[in-house]
Amino acid sequence: MQPENLISLKDDMIAFVAGHGMRRMSGYVSEEVPTVLFEEENPDGWKDFVELAKAAGAPFVTMSEVVLEKDDIAALIERIRDQVYPDDDAPEIDDAERLVRHVGKIGYLQLGFAHQGVMFLFEVATDWYDSFQDLLDTVTDLGGIVVEDRDTDE
Image (tube, helix red, strand yellow):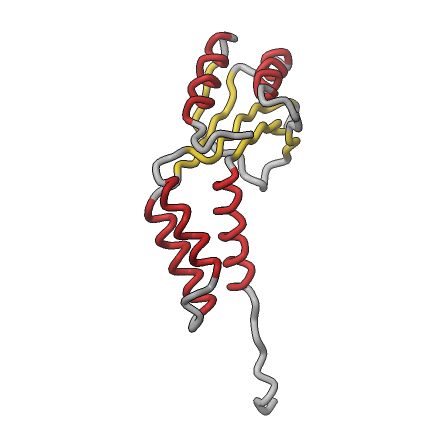
């Protein structure tokens, strides 16, 4: 079970990486880069990941975090309202509004290292961050739907 704020995990990661004589570089590895996602059920699996990075000879690891901002929630709610108009009682709006209690918290962490042209990644997220992402994906998917008007003359 993940805590609601990954700040202490981030601090542990920073200390562990430094303790292995490695450096950190702030940076997010996007989906456009060839990647391998590290899968580990153990809550301390990220330590194995850092040890793998060291064994692979990586001089540094990348580290990225996402802190939920009030503006993120406001933008999400606005996009949801645009999509569900005129239904102001849509459950997605309530779900987004409940995220306000997580403002200022770290919801996502990513560690990465490069080896032979591939980025190896470790990712961890809170449940609320996953919900936030699901809502964003839903709004993005709905925004991409095009309705054709079949009544127009060609």
